[in-house]
Length: 65
Image 1 (cartoon, helix red, strand yellow):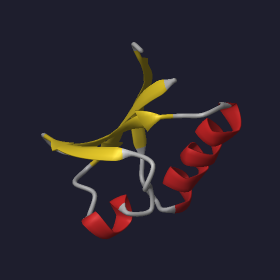
Image 2 (tube, helix red, strand yellow; image 1 turned 120 degrees about the vertical axis):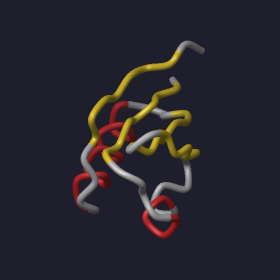
Image 3 (cartoon, helix red, strand yellow; image 1 turned 60 degrees about the horizontal axis):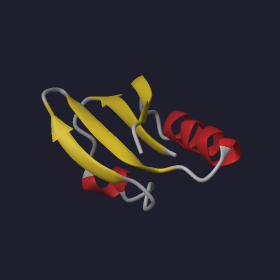
Image 4 (cartoon, helix red, strand yellow; image 1 turned 180 degrees about the vertical axis):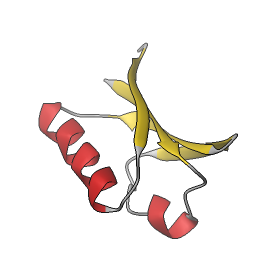
C-alpha cells in the first residue's frame, strides 16, 4: 500500500532523514512524505514517529497502486 502524508511546514533535511522509507517533496507551507507502507503496524509506527518528532500530519491518504 502506498500512502501520502501532508505535514505542516518545511521539514528540514535532518528531520526527513528520520523517515528513510519515505520520499519527500516540499510544497507550499507543507512537506509531502510518500511511499510504500508494509502493514498496519508500519503505518502506526510512522504516525508515532511524526508525533515524537513534533511534526503535525495535516492529511494522510492511501494512494492508488
